[in-house]
Amino acid sequence: MEVRTTEVPDVDRFCRFSRAVLEHVTSRWGVLVLIALLERSYRFSELRRRVGDVSEKMLAQTLQTLERDGFVHRDAKPVIPPRVDYSLTPLGREAAERIWELTRWVEARLDQVATAQESYDGRP
Image (cartoon, rainbow, N blue to C red; front, side, top):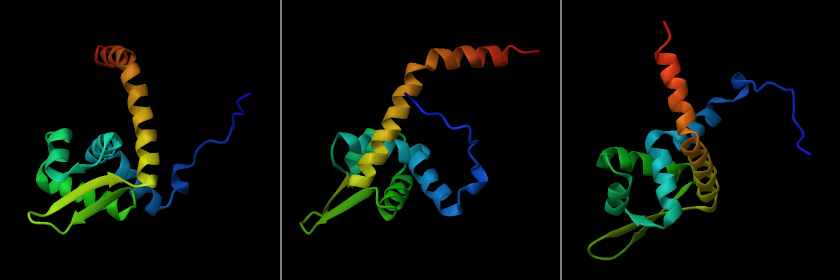
């Protein structure tokens, strides 16, 4: 039996830190990077192609942010030419799996969203 609480979420209760982390994992590029890394580890250029439409600068910033937050592991190998691989940490895998669940939920309801948008756009 599912227990439901009547408590209304208090968005003001969240501190700036948790809001910042939430923003990192739910940003446009953060979501796409985390989902891509669910598949396997990637080199920077491979990840850029996999994500698509992201600039090198934006991808680098996103990876640095996710690494700093503990979601992404950066493995720089001391070889010539240099090789850097990116993968998910256990924390990152947990976050990515939850984001993937939300993504699948959204995709399963796109018809309902399109209907709602058409209804909204057709209002006088």
